[in-house]
Each structure stands twice: as C-alpha cells, then as structure tokens.
Length: 303
Image 1 (tube, rainbow, N blue to C red):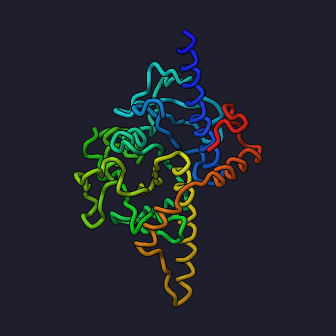
Image 2 (image 1 turned 180 degrees about the horizontal axis):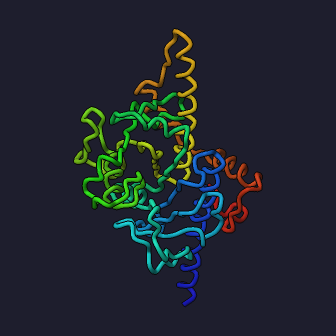
Image 3 (image 1 turned 135 degrees about the horizontal axis):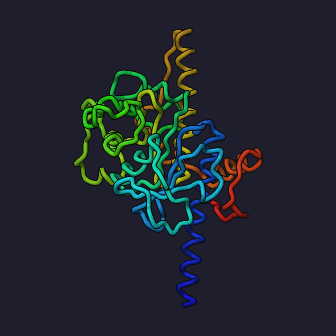
C-alpha cells in the first residue's frame, strides 16, 4: 500500500537523521578531546525508547550505520532483529561497556543521551577517597555540575560478582551498570546512599555527572546535543579548576567558585547547546578532514 511505504520512508528518514547526528557527536567529542580510542556516546531510539544506539569502536572511525549497534534498554542485550540498518552484534566483547548506557536509560526514562569519557584532565577529579568529587563549577558554562558530583567506585560493588570476575574497573556487568546508574541519585550527605523514592526522581537523575575512580566520567542529557555540551564542559571546567588550584598554591588569594544559586541558574538558563554552537562544532569536524559521516547531507541532520 502506498501509504504504508511513505510512512516507512518517513520513519527511516527520521531515524537516519538521529543516527547522523550521533555520528557527528562522536566526531565532535573526539575533536574536543573527550573521546579518544576509548569512550562512547549513545542516543535513545526516538522511534522506540526501549532501545538505544552507540558504537564500540574508536570515535574517529565511526562513519556509517555499519559502525553503530542497537541495544535493548531493559537488559543491555543486543537487538537481534534491528530494522535500523545498523550493524548486528555478532559477539559481545568482554570490554564492552554498553551497560553504562542501558542501565541509565532503564532507570531514568527521560534521559535521551549518555556520554562516557576517559578524558585524562577530568579523571583526576575522581581519585579522592570521598563520596563526592573535588571538581566544582568554576565557570558559568559548567553550572550543571552543582555543588558536588558523586564518585562511583567499582571496588565497592564487586562482592556481588563471581570471585573470578576481572576487577578491571570496566562496567561490563549489569550489576555494575545498575550500581553506576544509582549513583546518579546518591546524596553526599548520606555517604553516597541512593535517595530513590522522592516523587519523580527516577524520571531524571539528581546529578548530571558521575566520576568513576580510576576510569573516567559519565554524563547525560535530555538531548544528544546537550549531552555533548556537558561532556565538553566537564573537561573544560576541569582544566580551569586545575589551573586555578595551581595558581592558588602560589598566592594568598582563594578560588571563588559558583555559588549554589549561581550554579543552578546557569544550569537552568544557559547550560545547553544552541543551534549556532552545534553548527560550529559540526563545521570544525567537517573542515578538519579527519572525519567522515556517510549519513550526512546538506542540513539533513541539522539541530
């Protein structure tokens, strides 16, 4: 029937726009130093929120749907009969960290995109033996960090795994993924205890970012573009604070971070990706000559 064909074509076109933006997001995050040979970004399927898309290859190599995979949100299993045109998962690598994404999407229905990064300038802020990170909101662009970001320590959760399970800090088991997802609702005043149970708190996490001891950080947003924004500004804020702390050691002045009110207001009003910013990031990747996006055509994946 002609109507069904057109509807299918519209479905494919809409999904391809999302997947094209996902490929671009991989490239932007690589160019901005958030993703290297490790790390990944995902997006929830806009046509079916029970699945999501990501890639397990280095960001600079992602260029088409054959480099993307579709996964189930409920249990982190690969989608066996995907109609997206993405590459089927033949075998799950022991190093795959798709549970980072599936468990966050499963716990927080309004989350639409997740970024996991091994960025070295940010990873240092997850190394302290404290429920909360040392990283604070140093600039208006990072108000979403709030007054404290939790630290997830995988070592606290190995007891539920087989004794022979590798303690390599990877989130490659659903129990570790669930524990990480819960950390986004933890409260430092209660020594990292989950504050689940508050009305509506499971729609979106309490915290925008969680650091992983010895591993990296994870951030999320309600759009792909804003997840990219947050990941970039975690790194930039870490660079700013590190420089400020070094200067502090050589002077008598104190570093003044954003107040709780300032951080909140910045988060609610300006901590997001504008169309112009997304266009600029996209142009930077396209003009660099390092990246290819086979799904991108003129303004097809525009934001």
